[in-house]
Image (cartoon, rainbow, N blue to C red; front, side, top):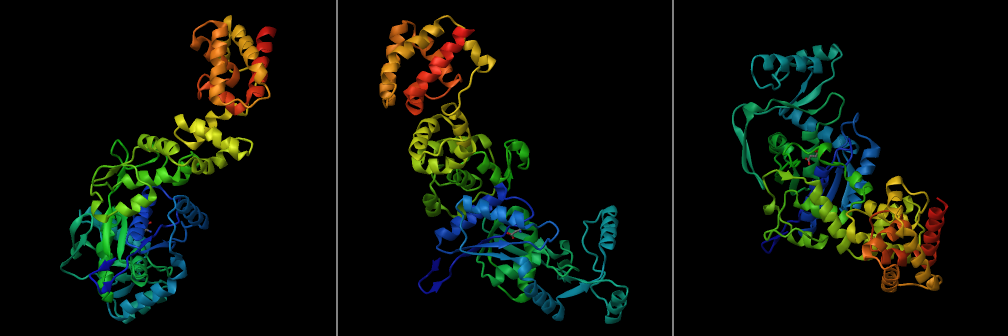
Length: 482
Ligand code: GLU
C-alpha cells in the first residue's frame, strides 16, 4: 500500500494454522480475508504452519490444510514456513530476554501450577501464575536444577499499568497488567509457546497486519508486551468475529459440516464456497452478495468487517452453490464435476458429459447431487423399486410404450435433438389420446426408473433414441410377462 508519495509500505499478511486438525469454516474464512487483503493491496500472503504442539500436530493435517487452501484458490506467495524449523530463532530471543532481566527460568512443574490454580480458584481469585520463580537467587536455581527440574522460561509482566491497542474491527481495547500473570514463552521441552513464536515470526516476517479469529484478542496484550520488550513496532490487528450457527450457538457439526474438505466431497464449488465465506463477517456497501474472486479482491476492505458474530447458514450456502452451478461457465462446472462422474462410473466422454452438466445443473444444488440425478443415464435395471413399479400398473401404460416405440423407431439410428425429441413426444401423446401428463409420466418412469428428473426430451437426447427404444421394449416385455 502506498502511503503518501515516498513511503512505500507493502502489506504482508499471514495465515498461520496449527496443523492439529482439518481446515474448518472459520479457518478458511480467516485465510480468505488475509488473501483478499494481500491481493487488494498488492502485498504478500504468507503461509506459516504453527506446529510447535508436537503431540497434536501431524504432517497429514498440514498437507490437508494446504490442499484445501489450494482448492479454495487461496494461493500463498511465501511459505509454508514451519515453526518447528525455526526453534533456534525463538530460543535465541528468549535467552536475550532472560539476559536483560525481562524473562526468567521457571522450575514449577505442571502439577504445582495446577495446585496453585486450584487454590486461587477456591479463594475466588482469577487464576494466574503466582510469580514463585520470579525472584529466585542463583543458588535457588542450582538447587532446583540439581533436583532434576528443567526450566521453562517465563515472561515478566510489568507490575502496575495497562496496555491498549486499536483493533481495526473492535476499536480501542485495554488490558490491565494485573490481570495477566507471568506467562511461559519457552516450555521446558525447549519449544516456544504460541504467544512467543507468533511475535518472533510476525516481526521477522515483517507482517504488517494480523487478521485472525477474535479468540486471540486475549492473547494480544501478551504479544504486545513481547513487542515492547524487544522495542519492535507491532503490526496492526484485525480480530474477526466468531461464526455461530443459526441458533446462535458456536458453530459445530450440528449446523452442517465444519470441515472444508467435507464441502468439497459433498460437491460444493470452490467459488461458491469463497463467496459464502466472504459474507461471514464482511458485507459490501450496497448489500450485494454475489462476487467473483476478482470482484472480491477489488471490493474487500478491512473497515467493512463486522464486529457482530457471523451466522453460518448451510441452506444459504446450498442456495449459493446452486446459483454458481448455473452461472459459472459450463466448462468450469464440468471440470469440477469430473471426479464425481468418475466415482459413479460415467464414461469419460467430455462432449457428452458437458451436455449432461448443461441439463442437470439446472435443477440441482451440488455437483454430487447433479451426478447422482444423472445416474439413470448410465444405469437401468428391472425390476424397479416397488414404489416406482406402482406407477406402471395402469392399463394405459403398455399402450403408451407401444406408441412410443412406433413413433421413435424410425429415428433409431439418427441423432435426435431435444427439440425434435419434444416434437416426437407430442406425437406419442396424440397417438395415445390421453392428457400429456398421463402419457409422459409413465414414459419417464419406464425410461429413467425415477419419478423426477429433467425434461424427458433432454433425457432422450442424452441417452439416444436407440437406448430409449431398448429400455421401452424391455419394460413392455417385462409388463407383458407379468
Ligand atoms: N496458530 C494460531 C491458530 O491457529 C494462529 C493465531 C494467529 O493468527 O495468531 O489459531
